[in-house]
Length: 347
Image (cartoon, rainbow, N blue to C red):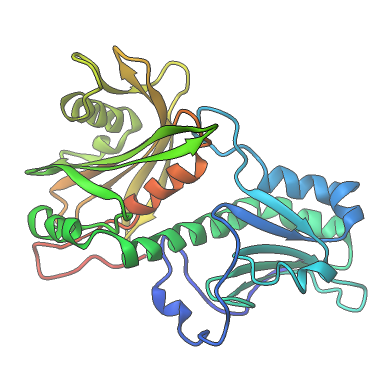
């Protein structure tokens, strides 16, 4: 039976503390783009083996909740020889290694191995059939580690470069905090409701194209456990979207597509409490617009209200995986002040 070994203990639940970088100041910064992942194995294994097929299935499988097919990660294959030079400092690495001289089957999880903020997962075993078994049995775990470290990198970037003035408004007027990305601003800031927007343009084929991201955060009274049922979360978000997320023409407003793509939900622990995450597609009523969304619903620390944070992306000319990841990173940086003296335990 293989074992999982942590050479450096780190707890990822949603975000790693920035102090993880302490003690690694002598290392270079990580390289590579968001969503990239380096796979280190031999050429024959990658091109013509069951091991290569399993790696591609896990890491290049479709990202859930997007309007078109997009892989979970953009993979860069290299051999162990080439990894030692060009790609050694890449942000995210999965390595296949081991031999008859080192027959222990194990997963080594290492952070800051060759670069600050780097995550390296080394899967060891002398038999490739055993490594395939390790991959299949730990698919969700491996994806969770790589996905959450990407969220953490965005969180740290937002914490450093995000708009400090907008953050102060949230903290003083809404009683919660969120690490916003640099271009974000408060479109609406009302009692128990805030609409955060980020608008930019990007050139493609010689033309400027719009990219819109946003988060609608609302606080509604908590009645009972049925408020966390997916149908009731959808109902609460739909009501707020109709009232607060208007479209570009009169009578248009943002809604959720429940016909062409059924929203997917999952339960999770967030800041020590129960939460429900939902992913799916939004559409504009009475206008032709749409895109992916991710939402988080969690009970506030006092237990009196549910906080619904609904995040969306509109980027019709581009892949949307990384834009949605940016929105998710902002949502999952949500923290709040408790009106009572005790504080909610962190994950």
